Length: 82
Image (cartoon, rainbow, N blue to C red; front, side, top):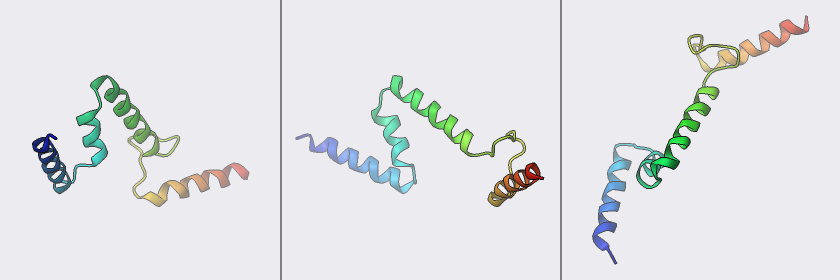
């Protein structure tokens, strides 16, 4: 058994946990080939971009606090009923 490699892997894992690198990000960069990694990262960035701002606003018009987006949606819905 390659015990030296297991030990090196354990040290790398412990050091990544200590500096708070997410395990998934480290695993993507370490184990998955670049041809598969790039589409995963791009898809993750697109998903984050779509989820991080409310529909109908540009990235420069983000709400100041999390509850603002819900109130804005309710206000628009109430206005459309009137």
